[in-house]
Amino acid sequence: MSTNYLETISTMVEIGLGWSVLPETLVRGLHVMPFEAVRIERELGYIHHTKRSLSNAAVAFLGLMDGG
Image 1 (cartoon, rainbow, N blue to C red):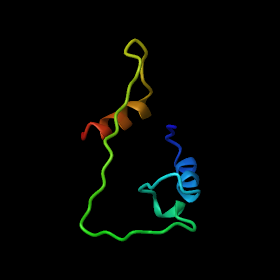
Image 2 (image 1 turned 90 degrees about the vertical axis):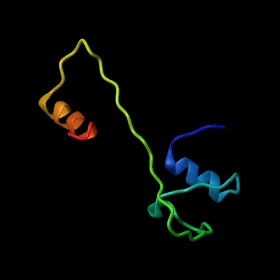
Image 3 (image 1 turned 60 degrees about the horizontal axis):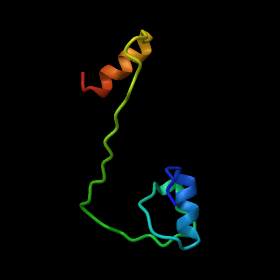
């Protein structure tokens, strides 16, 4: 079973189907294992239709994502 919804993942962990790394806002009744000096990162990307123009807000957002 595969899912990307954090709420669903949290529920699956709660009923004992596995373990996960979740945001603190989703920790309810779960055993929390403390750890130090671990940096968890997630690389994000984007796609867009190259034959359609982007709004000014979209251009600014993509500029921020590209590090500019």
